[in-house]
Image (cartoon, rainbow, N blue to C red; front, side):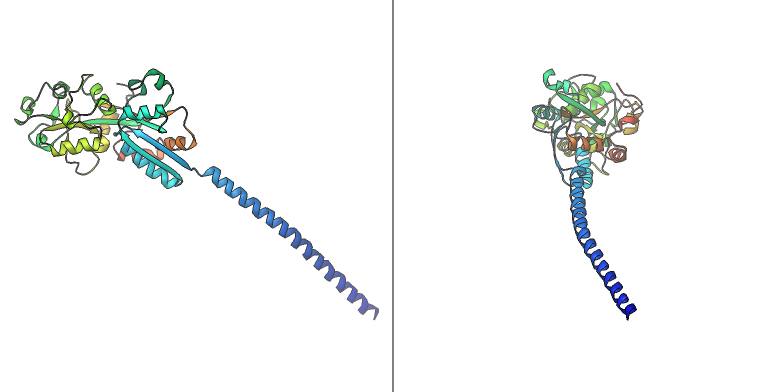
Length: 312
């Protein structure tokens, strides 16, 4: 009997202990799990907020650089969908003025700020040299079909300054030369005048002047006897409808730009007013990354590190 009572007492003690243990675990577990879950959720959310970029980027300026900026923005958005990027053209001068005024985050330019802005305005800007760009003379195909595929620099200067006005003077058809020109604010024009025309000022054809490279290309395509110039980035399609012209026997290609034989190239700049914020800096870093370099060349732009000459 005593053994039966003792057994019952032991069973009761064990049961009580188990209940106490369960109660303690339940209390601690609920409290612990609640705190842990809340803490982890809080840390997770704050981590996502701090790690994931969000915000806006606005840019304007060079039409020659716009295809690259647009493409890089699309790829960057795949990585950072909460960043809104707006990119306008308008010409290098306008882009530099806008970033100096603080109306955009990035001013895209084919030339340095000092070439377009007052010293006081240029001083407050930070230059981010993102790539190399090559400018090519382009003509309506009727000119190359007639045998003009190459011009000396002297002939090119004579044509663009308005001295030579008929293609027959340079071995082409008896046809008027129609200049498709860029305005004074254009960085592409400044680059072409400096390196293709040896500093000579281009004659303006006000009736067919445009600061949009895409419009210029279309005008050359649609106008017999027309000649103009665009960046290689506008000539990467299978059929652009225009023909490029070599200068002194050297074709306007990335390879010839890299090896230093083709002279009409410059560095492309993305200027910020002071140091950029985190979001803008991330976008600039992405454009200049090795990962994006291959894509950059597919678009007709040069990778700065591949240049065998750095000045000309």
